[in-house]
Amino acid sequence: MFPGQGSQYPGMGADLAAESSKARQIFERANDILGYSLTRIMFDDRGDELNRTVHTQPAVFVHSMALLGILEERYALCPVVAGGHSLGEYSALCAAGILDFADAVDIIRIRARGMDQAQPAGTCGMAAIIGLTKDRVLELIEGTRGADVLEAANFNSPDQVVVSGVMTALTRVVEAAGKLRRTKAVLLPVSSAFHTALMEPAKDALNSRLEGVSFGEARFPVIANLNARPYPASPQEIRRNLVDQVVRPVLWEDCVTSMKESGPTKFVEIGPGKVLTGLLRRIDKQLPSANISDVPSVGSLEAQSA
View 1 (spheres, rainbow, N blue to C red):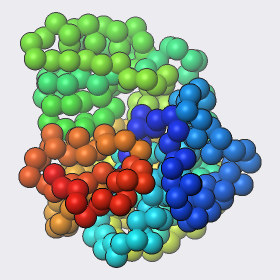
View 2 (view 1 turned 120 degrees about the vertical axis):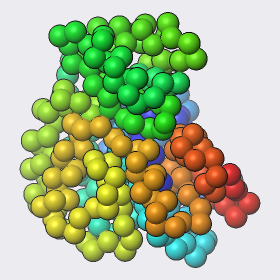
View 3 (view 1 turned 90 degrees about the horizontal axis):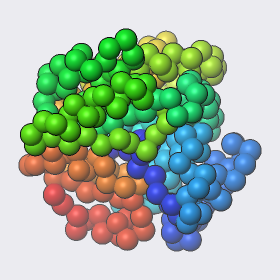
């Protein structure tokens, strides 16, 4: 499992670069492709620039790929299936050999820029609603949306749905959720309404860049956010999935259910933070899991379990 935007943290990856020549090579290659020092932004303890979407998305992807490179050097990994949350889907596609690393970095650069520029800064956002069922959140959206854009963006677990839209509507739905018993609504540290119709302006540049990409054959299935089914082999369908993913909700709970059907012995989250490991426990507490986010967790993979 590969995390997406929101899992970043100041200083991420610095320990990997200090520990592993493989990680350093991956970081340096990303810097060359992007044409600027992403590692300077990632390794900075203040994190001032890291939270900008244009830097966050490549940073999370490259961090995940550096961790995967170290894991592949140290362990005999036998993946049977993979999935990634939003941006993390690119990590999963790269891990499976469907997407080349260099292509992925450049595509993510274009994706991040388009998503960052889709709306004026400060006008839109996202919030996690915790404690309500999917149907109840959809009812809440209908009751507070008014004439504004407000949509369910991430169906993360049975009791967590992320809503996304313009700030006026988002404020209303957060206030309404806060009045309900055993319910919590938390504004997320993002400045855009990801996975909604408001992301339409980001699609054209992404689609144009994807037209020039050659996709490889999958070494193992990758479950798509769009429909919780394995990615198709058709290049045209792969492109369509990635473009549509920008404006459609992430069906993460369904993705986990689909991954379970492949019979993995352990779910391993590879990337910054432990968001997906936490969601996994909310979906099914019985699933064995581990999160790999830094040098110590790489060394303790065998000992980690749910």
